[in-house]
Length: 113
Length: 113
Image (cartoon, rainbow over all chains, first blue to last red; front, side, top):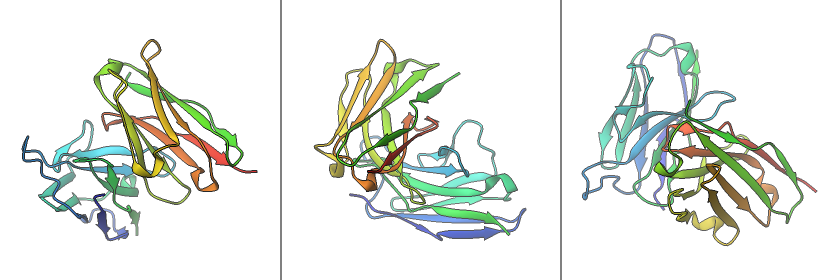
């Protein structure tokens, strides 16, 4: 199984500041057949279902503010929030879907200072 | 609007089976696979398996092989997930998700004697 490792696991941030979360996979998530890299980012706000933020590394899901961006390739990925707002509180997960079983990172809890 | 409506909470005894449902609306049911993801209390997300409503094809995570069955009913646009041989560590919130960006609100399963 592909192991997804996120850092940090806890991220206190002052509103208005930038924040970054790293995600590393134990195998490449690049699919040579179609040229896509299958790494997505989710945010689970308190008491809610996970919501898709970013798919295939860098594409923002519908309705996601442009302060969220994703980057990376192969086995190293980053989610960046350019200016954190109070509503961004929750647990962020990276997820690989290049192969089964689909696997998630452990989650990074973002809190407001 | 596009949504997945999940069945209500369940309380089961160890060794019993639980059958959860997930009804899709607002889109063509057979167009996107539906996956099941669970979350134990205070823990991260765990992928269980996926079903393609178009043909019923399924893939399960290895740890659930032999006690997990996913089925679908195209006449009601509903997917079912049955987990047998319940143990205390199967207590969790079970989510269904379609296409990655549409998630149900989750069903709580309690396992207690």
